[in-house]
Length: 209
Image (cartoon, rainbow, N blue to C red; front, top):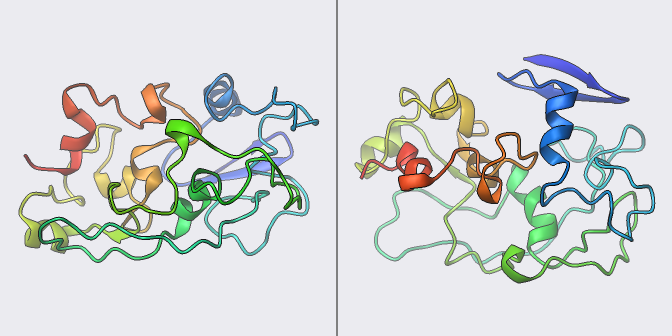
């Protein structure tokens, strides 16, 4: 585990050391750059999600969290066919992603504000019905890979990012939104993907098809 001070914000990064310049460069100009939106009167790049002071101490899945967290109940993926994994309600970092993308919480609900009026829409709106979306918040381990037969063993399969799937793409062995998408757009791939999906490369990292 490494620590890097980014301005006044200390970001804890496991297994990957990011410079402040690389982090800011990724977000700047990306879909998560809200610094120029009229409702962000501070003009700051990080403040919609993070704050150096008065952070939400109840959130353990992201450093110094500053955004309202969704309380919605979601319809989760259940098929078709037999699903060997147990899919629960979105948790961890996925719940934080959905705190904008479920459409129940305004993007400008940060810093204690709960009356924002800027909501995600269009293709960016995931909603609370996740039954037709890739399942998230499920345990993806060697046992699941063996039972399923169509998944690569995450503890030994290369992620394409330098380590294994477990080390680079999972969150305490759990598959979450952040397993495929990088909120900070570090790689600069389309749709904030962690890996370029040309030829379904990202999909085939986990799926043995």
